[in-house]
Amino acid sequence: MTVGVVAIQGDFEKHVNSLLRLSKAGLETKEIRCAEDLENVDRVIIPGGESTTVGLLMRRFGLGPALIERAKSGMHIWGTCMGMILMAREIEERPDQYSLGILDVAVRRNAFGTQVHSFEDSVAVSGLSEPIEGVFIRAPIVSRMGEGVQVIAQYEGKIVGVRQGNLIGTSFHPELTLDTRMHEWFLEL
Ligand code: GLN
Image 1 (cartoon, rainbow, N blue to C red):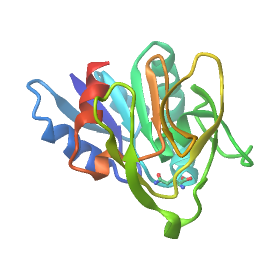
Image 2: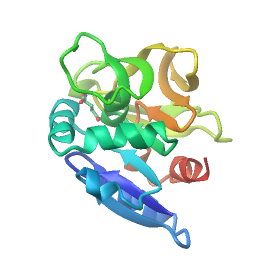
Image 3: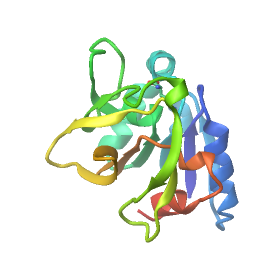
Image 4: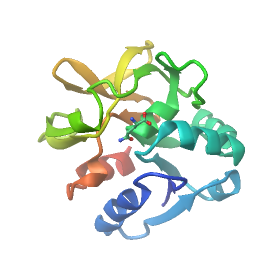
């Protein structure tokens, strides 16, 4: 299995490291920057970073439309923080910001405050038997969601993890911890 990690900007290397740490036989990783890079890729992770910049470049490099097509044909895509913002159908108060629109949710950027309000805390995720350490960095929340979307994680009553079939979004960053259970779970979907 080849897992592509969108590598335009952000913490993509951390995702690659988490995947390599799984040391799964036959697992390969690939950095994705343009549509052609998606060839022979089975799953994609969109990392944390700056969603405005990466959205613009995704569109410019033709990666946006290619990801939309692959999402529709059932490829598993997981977005962490910025990644979830870029997957969302709607970004609150930013109608002009580019997003793929594949995940039927509205997100609120920086919902916990600015950089100084970044934090870590334990979060229960459905599918994992024990909670994981959630790293929240200028994290978004899901403020509305469509019928086909399931909540997989909440923090203080706010939705911080969702699943819509083959698509997963989390507000937090499992790639910034040494815990690889969420990556493992994603590969097993
Ligand atoms: N606040 C950033 C944004 O809106 C996301 C931050 C992150 O990915 N850690 O793009």
